[in-house]
Image 1 (cartoon, rainbow, N blue to C red):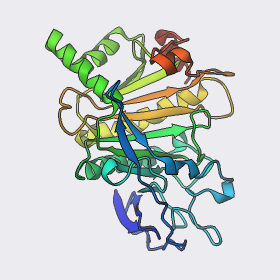
Image 2: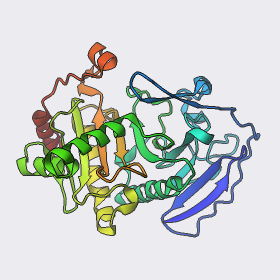
Image 3: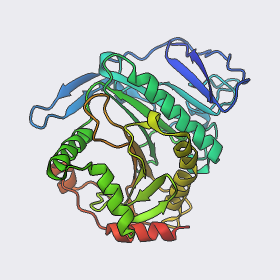
Image 4: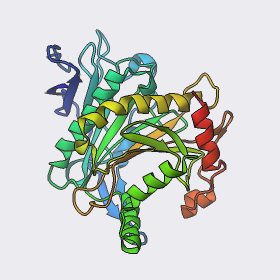
Length: 342
């Protein structure tokens, strides 16, 4: 991996990730240096302990622009974008409309490909590996920033999920407070250790591998399985067999195997409903916080809001109001259907 660090016209950082050195990344951002004024605020809900980001400036963020005005495509004559280069492999830049910035953290956009009409599942294994290397690099660099306690890499795909830019991309958040779901993981892991003397996430992986019926696919270093109490109709967790806290601790063998398994998993999701349109999904990397996260395990959680070819899983009153999920698909059935979606 070779990286080139530069700046956009308004001073935001832009980083190109290339599979080899030698690419000319000197193209300048020719847009006016107008920076969006943002002052996100973190507020703690005293009733739950959860942190909520208040980011009112995001009301004016770009929303479903026409393809010829996509801000994530490479720049060309007469159409300048967030990426000045005429082509790129993987590009990462500071979000123009961040949910977190300054003392509240940092938000970055990760563009996987210059091809506007493709998706992560269309990448080669080599390009998927480059994205993994970029995620790892961002985790390492952002973790070293003052005040950052957790780094979160994720991808949202599909208008059904709420994506406002269809160009294939993901994001990286540097949190200055532990995310609510991570806090639940920490509490559950501590209780499991106290009760059994074992690690919760090692036990979850071992149980799924031993039972087999919820395993979707497995390799030498990774296993993808549907969790026992899946919240979403089709939800798969991808774990390395060796417990590590974050992406920076993976071995070369683990990194080398990941692209094949992950691309296989994404393509199964796309075949699941027999539709010409790709399946909407969220792919979320769960990494341990920088302190106090010794019991947590790096893993990726992938899920879709689609439950059938013509029905979506909406968060109804129980889920939205009480965080009490009701799943319409048995996890064992979901795993079977994904295994069959070859």
